[in-house]
Image (cartoon, rainbow, N blue to C red):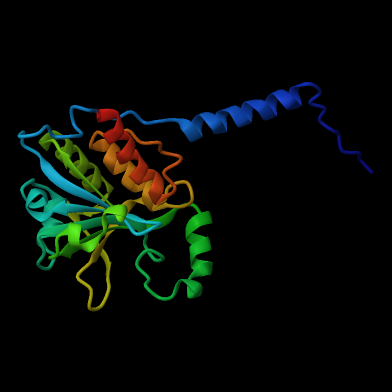
Length: 234
């Protein structure tokens, strides 16, 4: 019987472990830099008012419908196809788990699939809201910010780039009965390494906000990125 050969790392083992831990720590604290010239519109200067909404574990963006429709492209076309509402709530998630509204206890196996199986299809949610976001969410679950026109264009372009286009148009993946929200196919994939809050953080980073990508696994971290920027500005 052939004996297996053991690999003796000798003194290299502890060094390898420390190196791995150092890389993980560096990624955990790494900040994707923002761009102050894009982010906050100055007092009295042109700008677009947006809101980040946090339900405790998931984040959406509330964006003025008029601002989205004013720019050409498939995102504006998709917005025009929606029902009435002056605000558009924008979110992203797994094509099945994100859309399903059945009790969470019934969806745990599917949640495990969405988290741990790589390459899951995803969708961009566009949900028209007639009520002002400041009335929909309390202050502790909402952050209000005003982007420069260039910052808004970069943010909207990032959202648009997530759409999976067919003949240049966004494609509806699913729609819930009795719900104005529409879920458009996305070219990105959902898994534990790229969750809904990671996506929102990436959209905000495109608009000029400094974010910590790996730590943006939670909605609180995305909220915290806006708070840190505001503190730095003060």
